[in-house]
Image (cartoon, rainbow, N blue to C red; front, side, top):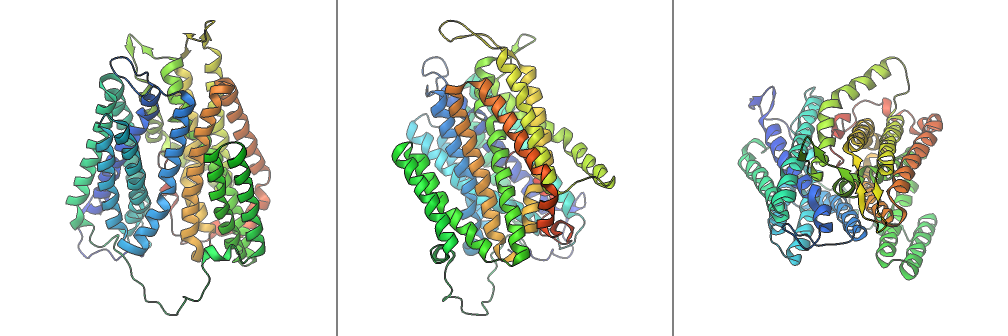
Length: 519
């Protein structure tokens, strides 16, 4: 989508287009609804069916599994959502459609019935898929190319995301846990409805952005083979596809049909990735290799980070002493800690990296991602300590709980790690990806984020058999090892980028990552 020119004499607020604040408020309330629902989702699933505020009474492993699949599909849905906007209706209408689907989804979740629960989740997946990948791009479209206000515009936009997320966990979390789960889901829906109303009323300020662009076709490309068909005509792509598909088939037949199907679906991603690699020249192939490595870092990062909404959420509820000066803190409130820390530390971390770079120190994007992975991983050592404070009786019931201080310190390290890695990840990928494959790489980035979320759910499942001590410690050690290995090979990796990060005029700014665990 090519951004249109800004109308002459456009009205501004604080020096920025009014449209920025329309999108700011729309996204703030959308994130309020999403993170509000996310804060209570797993807690609702594991809550016993008896009592004043009954849940579904699921086992922890089953709840973590659903959380993993749900959050994975939320991100994967961004791929068809982006295609829908680029090829069919434009970004502006895609955001409108996504908002309507989200209003319907959150509204249905307020109904106390299982059919409504699963229908609501499905509609939210579709709604986020249509809205999320397009509203950020519309922010960029508000500014002419080279407009110096653009960086600050994105910074303002992403601060709105964190304001919405912080408020969501506090308000929706309290209502859901203390009054009623479905009242909490309903409150999240009210937030989304407010965002949708603001977006609809603000259309006059968005006339020049997000419209469908129809480009003239200069040549007939109908005879060119499709990306799908190239998997089966290029030898190495076919081999990669077959090996991955067979592995998925073995998992399907011997272990888990759901994970087997997932691996078989990933066989197409492997084939596509090899086809894209084959299409490049020598420099492009080197850069594509580094991009694929960054995807692995992204999967590891979010696989660990997203324990927040699953395992750490339940741990806070069941095994943390939540009494603070006589007040029982709702476990869901800890879901706001990350957003609050982002608002506090975002500028400080950004300023540190500027200082670090000015001193001539290593400050490449891949280095920041590795450092962010390590710091985030170290946060789990605090959870390791917390798990040693929990005591059990002979029946396995919890009789001694850990201090909430360990949770807060863990989230602090997670936030610092996120602020090191997330602001540069998407920017780094767009700098390295060939222009003709930019859409594929963007989709692959979101798919990698989705796989990281699925990994998070799987780790939560394993904790029910391995125990929190082993899972928390294992995550911390694994993230540290991966981060250190990347740092050790940073020089050859930088050579493979062929100076891509030194090229001015890239399409995305590094400010486009100041977002809560949700690119």
